[in-house]
Image 1 (cartoon, rainbow, N blue to C red):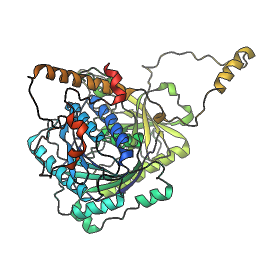
Image 2 (tube, rainbow, N blue to C red):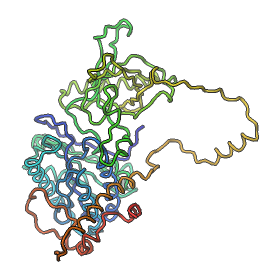
Image 3 (tube, helix red, strand yellow):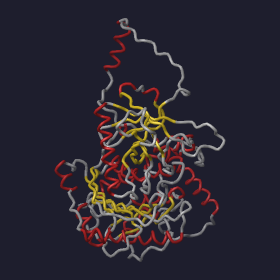
Image 4 (cartoon, rainbow, N blue to C red):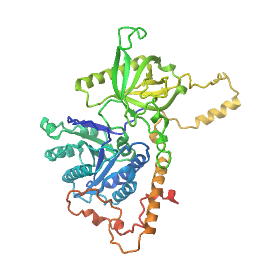
Amino acid sequence: WHSSVTQVKHIHLHTQYSQSHCQQPSRILIVDVTSASWDNTCSVLSEALENTLSLACRLTGPCRVPLLSLYVVQNQQECLLPFVQLKESFARVQACISELRSLPREGCFPQGGDGVVQAVQDGLQQFKQYSRHTVVGGSTNSSVEIIILTSQSGKEMVKHLEKKLKDVDLVSLRRIQVIEVLKRGFLEPEDVEQCMLAEEPSSNDIAILGMDIDLQTIEDNVISLEMLFKTWLHDCGSEREHLHLLLPSGGSSYATAPKTTLICLKCDLQERLLDPALLLGTADGTMKTADSNSSCQMTAWPATVLYKLQVVKALKSEGVCESVLYGLPFIIKPTSCWQLDWDELELNQHSFHALCHSLLKRKWMLLAKLDPQNTCPSWNIVVHSYYIIVPSDSATLLVKAVAVRELLMPSVFPALLAEHPERVQVPIESALNSLEVEVTYNPLHLKSNLYKHLKSILYRPLHRQQAQHRDQRPERHQSKQHQSRAKATVAPLLMAPSPAQLFRPAVVKRDSSEYSFLPKEDDEFLQ
């Protein structure tokens, strides 16, 4: 169930957080457009970003990308989108993406890392100012992640950042991601290895920076960039583990072992799929699924409860019928909770790997019972849920809910006939022979038009607001300025006037009544 579209190299710099934060981090996206390959990257980046943010805006529940800001680096940095609360600001996000699409193409600016460093500093300063005056989701949003997209050498960019950020206050910074975007076909095996072998920072750099820098290379296509941005939708909290997987201790049979002698593997839960019910709910986003409210079902988002799965039996892999599995699958991984000491983390990880290896070797699955969390006071009987845990050839497990007696419906499965009349067998065989056969199923090859559907829903309120605004405002002459530009919530650092304004006459001269945030391919949804 795993697909890999990127090759990752982590440069780990030890981080100590002063306190736990249950919120998703804010995001600052810095796009370096100084490379000659920006012409290829511009359209795919804009589409991938728009697709992912349409998901984030329509997902019910706590916002997975609470605050977003976007910078572009030309010969200087420019803030296209000051910090906004994403769910309330899709119009401003669309204006920003439209402006991103309108940037000059093909090597208009000299390369250099200083603009990126200035954008990092400006973004951190703006985040500090925003955090002082704004409360998001009932608590202060006190950490931020910076994502830098560049076609320059990622290794050189990391070195430059390490050198220039030594004296910068990075208390609120959780990590920096440097994403080197390469043209399709450039990711040859030897090139990938060369790109990813970034030098380890010295111990002095570790002490000074106190943060993580991730170096990653991806191809400049929509799917790769989309998967990069979708990582923002995962639960990024590492303050506590999500799941305790409880195994009976060895030395005696399970039937005679005391209940208190259990091996506890501390794990994190991760969504494999987004729940479609969270996207296709009511227009006001008030719909809730049963899983998110039930005390006897697991959910990976938001991870507010510590679940306990107690293994009760082992099952032969060939002995589990697919028809009795239901619900969304979750990925189980060894926890990365930073509050555990390194020895415990290492032992826990090795134990988890040993479990995966042993289950594969034995061709076993595990049957586990979920301990209910907050039982309703009106319930005097505890209702248990059961799950099947499936191993893979990676260091992860798959968990799915399994039916119990009370849920199972009677079914009749008639036996197959040994022989069939040739007059019916031949047409069926012919029909099957005409089908294209694939060795594996790849969901990335199938599209359902969901993105277009979500964008059409998000665009409708925007165009209604624009129409109402045009009807209500008095006629007056207005200066021809960037009317699509998002206004800064806080005062950013002083910057020289951006030369990018000289390259956007088409955007500047269009009146706001004529301006459309819709890409051409989506115009049909507003007809």
